[in-house]
Amino acid sequence: MNSAGERPEGVSGRTRPRVGLLGTGPWARRTQAPALAAHAGSEFAGVWGRRTEAAAALAREHGVKVYEDPDALFADCDVAAFALPPDVQAPLAVRAAAAGCHLLLDKPVATTVGDARAVAEAATRHGVASVVFLTLRFAEPTAGWVAEQAGRTGWFTASAHWLGAVFPPDGATGAYADSPWRKAKGGLWDVGPHALSVLIPVLGEVTSVTAARGPSDLVQLSLRHASGAASTAVLSLGAPRAAAGVGLELRGAEGVFALPDWSDVPGAYGRALDALLAAARTGVPDPRDAEFGARLTEILAEAEGQLR
Image 1: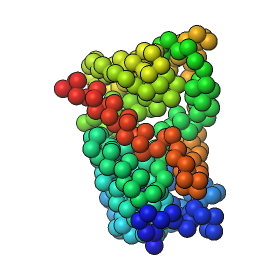
Image 2: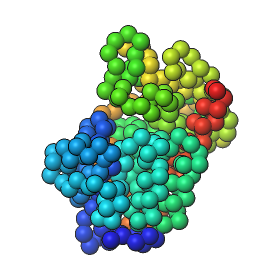
Image 3: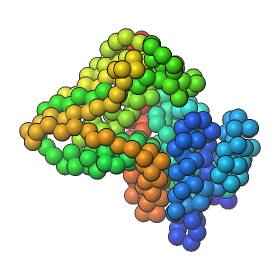
Image 4: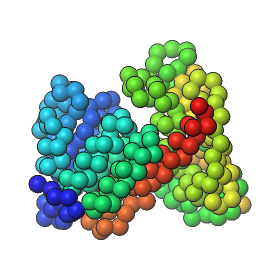
């Protein structure tokens, strides 16, 4: 059993680390579970979910154990991988860290600053590694593109848009429409972390944010960055189907650079697990860790506060 403050044996090199998945929704079924099952450097140990039947079905599909209690999963595993709503994820992540599990978190880490900070502080207090799965920072070629742009200087401005048709005004809802937290919190919280996860490492820390509402759940953020550059991000889950899409463009002294397309999200999740295991082995925090996730929550919470 893992003990608080100790690095689990599974990341010491003696055995493959055991990874337990918490969550059974569409994201877990399509991304986390297939990626964990395919990951050569770890062992997919089992599944826990709030819906026992769904957890059992997902566990059977991948030939792993179903857990009836999350603390039992934490006791058996070196890594806790989360595919849960943010405000369910956060308190369970604190418990997982206390049990000595490294944390592979989903975004946003939480939708309140207090909960997000509690996760980051728990990871530090108990000496466990953490990574937040921000798709663009692990998918290829986007991850390499972000690293390349972060090496440039002289940025002037950037514009990002992530317009999803999960709740479109003109047709059937999308695959994640049964997610109550997405319905309640909208694009700001669901896709806002993706845009910020690219803008911040390239343009620098956000020093100010202004938020404005548009139609449906659309939110426009105007940001200033530590580099002096200004950026905008337009975010929605309620876009018309013909208007849906994702894009990000950077403009500066070296030219104009557009975010490339990406695919293979399960593969990106595998690379996020690789990054987590590397941080656990070396003790060097990953830049996409729970602390970064907490900073994203602070920015989004500030924006949300302006919209009320």
